[in-house]
Length: 307
Image 1 (tube, rainbow, N blue to C red):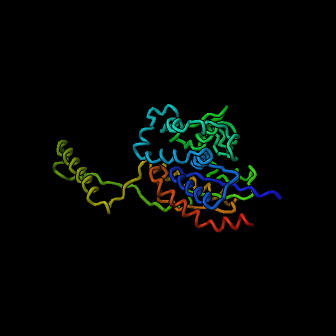
Image 2 (tube, helix red, strand yellow; image 1 turned 135 degrees about the vertical axis):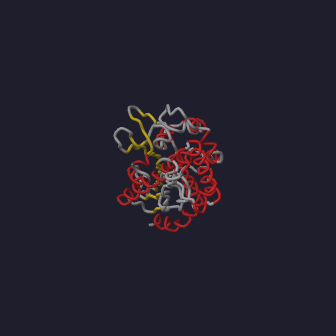
Image 3 (cartoon, helix red, strand yellow; image 1 turned 30 degrees about the vertical axis):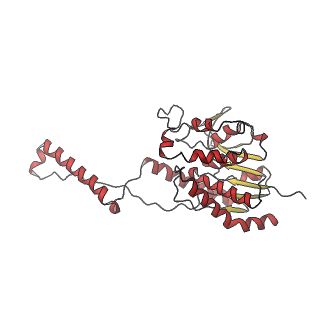
C-alpha cells in the first residue's frame, strides 16, 4: 500500500495567523512534512509563503505592520471596495519565487475563497498563486474583492474557516487542522449613556449663554472623569471593536459547524482569544503560542501517523 498522504488545513484568523508559522516550525523540527497544504484567508497566506520560502520576508513585513503600517495602506476613497489597499502589500512579495502557478508548486496547495454573488465556496487549486491568496484574504469591508473570470471573490472564512474538506478532496488521508478562533473570551461591554444637564426648574435655564457654558463644563468634567477613573469606565465599542468581534463570532460559529461534520485526525487550537485580528505586530508572541500548541499535540500527531 502507498504511504498515506498528510494534509495540513490552516485556518483563518487575520493577525492570529502567525501561529501557523509556529505550527509549521514544530512539524519541520519533528521531521513531519505535509503532502498537501490548504489554507483559508491568512492560512492561505502563510501556506503559500511556506511553499515559496517567503516566511522570513513575511515576518520582516509584519514587524512594520502596527497601527501606522496599516494606516499607510488605507484607501480613503473606497474606490476599490475596501478600506485597505492590499495591492501595496502584495506587490512587496512579487518576485521570481512567488510569481508562480499553483500547479507548479513543489507540493499540492489549495486556497478557499467565497463567490460574492452566489455565496458559494470556491476552491482555488490552479492559476496564479498570489491572485489566489489575495482572493482568500479579502475580508469584506476591509480588503477589496478580487476578480477571477466572471466572479468577484472575497474571504474564504465566510464559508469554510478551517479547510479540512479541501484537504480531503485533494487526496489527504490524514488531516492536521489548525483552528485559530476556538478560545474567544466573553466580552461584555455595554453601551455607555451620559446624562445631560438637568436645566428644568433652574432660573438660568432660559439664558442660552449660561446653558452653553454649563454644557461645556459638564463635558469637560466628563472627559476628566474618564481619564482619572479608568476603573469605573465602561466605554461603548468602537467601529473596529464591533467589526472585529463580529468576525470572531462568525468564524467561531461556522468553524464549529464545519468541523463537526468534517473532523480532522488532529485539531490544533492555539489559545489566541486575547489577540485582536488586526494586531499584526504581535508576531513573536503569536508564533510562540502556535509552537506551544503544536508541541502539546505532537505525541498525538505521531501516534496518528504511525497508525
